[in-house]
Image (cartoon, rainbow, N blue to C red; front, side, top):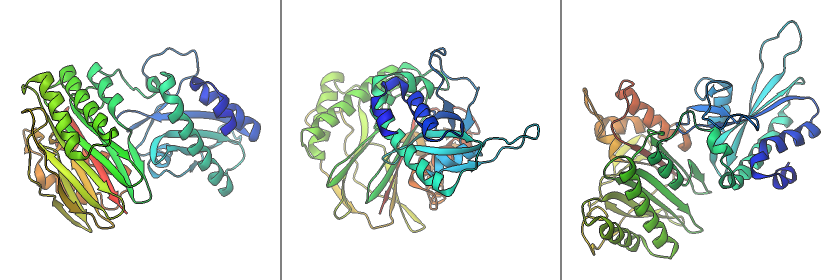
Length: 388
């Protein structure tokens, strides 16, 4: 499988995998790759080559919630599904295999075979899903095929810019599990999250850009680019915040700014160094106790030139969960009032039995339910960090 995927053109991974699988297991009746959409609520099939390059319709789309494919996607474990008999003949038994890369869920591989799937098959194909996920990660920047496939509808230009900035949906290491989500997915403005996992630390930022649309996206792009430039040059978080502050102020003269939370988590001892430059908030769940991490707020990035930022500290204990949200979550308002800190704490507490990868969407779902199906008035970012 690895040889077949390595030698295939970036745009042809599904066909290369299907050919290799057909040779390895002649009993396969069908192979289909489905990718999760930007909401992570749908699994969309990658169309065959030659189909129109348009966002996917409803043909062949599977929902994450309430389907065998969705269970495989969420659990990161293969799931067997036995359809009914048609005309008295043997119906193919379907196996849904999660496609995963370094903890990030990318979709599922749907495999239909006449012969029943064995436990050995499940273990073998789980590894195939990991191989395919790694190959997709490498191939993704070289073709638009997979980006087109995961779009249930067209993105706005602001959303296009923002999604290109995101590091992914999830990241996992021996000492942590990390996941994030940005909503609304197809027409976002200025909210963003970013992370980088290193040998001795984890860097994490959550940004709430001012304004809406393309102007907000450009402001956030400048902020995230400046932060990454400083971080990759070896700067500590105070220097990262100062450089981004100066770059934003030079460009906008204090008229626009970004409220940003900048964090560095030391992997050796769980010490969190943090700069709270604005509105994103941190909740910590320890056991069943959920509390806000109280920090001294400093000036947002770009408000005044030559601002000096001072990191604060707190320590994580094994089993702790951090949930970081933008103001589009806790300050969201409807006719019923503000979503608020109490509702956010309750939503966080209800996730205690869920995997870190499920938490951002679980919180977002409660926020959407609070809006009673109405569109969100502001971007909403939720990032979850589980400390092992």
